[in-house]
Image (tube, rainbow, N blue to C red):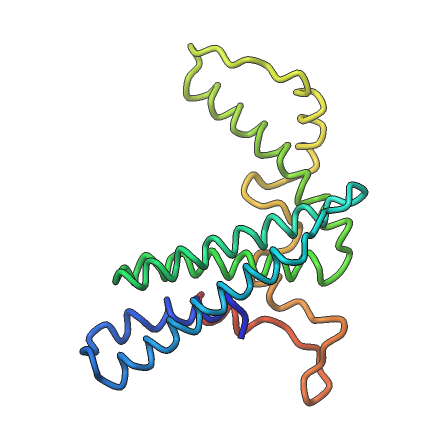
Length: 201
């Protein structure tokens, strides 16, 4: 079980067993899951910090993936803290974000990593230009300083049809259902992460 899955499981089960009283079997199970997620979180952070990873300057994928992993660790820590203080619904909301990060990492690394990484990074241009357009629309009397790279950003942004997603696939569900090129199930069929998607959506 990964750190994200452990934390998500805790966030998912806590609301359903919130009626359990201290000392009951349900409460004991949840405490064990909480402790397991917290311990795994600490181990994962220590392991990654010990690797002294330095992203390659020749590829955008390294920086993107390390950034997403870092974000997932912080989110998992937040989930554990929320659960510890009884904020179960709020923890469950962050679980969805954590799973989305996990599935995004899977999609980026499952095939064409360099191409997908460049497209993920390039979406910055679409985001910036759309925010500028929205600002000018809502605040027409407020001046907005033009960026020096505005022309370049507009050109890059034109490659993205949607203002709300960077990828060409249907969405997170497609990230989860994409077949793994290496790992196989017992029957020989390619593995996927459909379970991670279905449990939260």
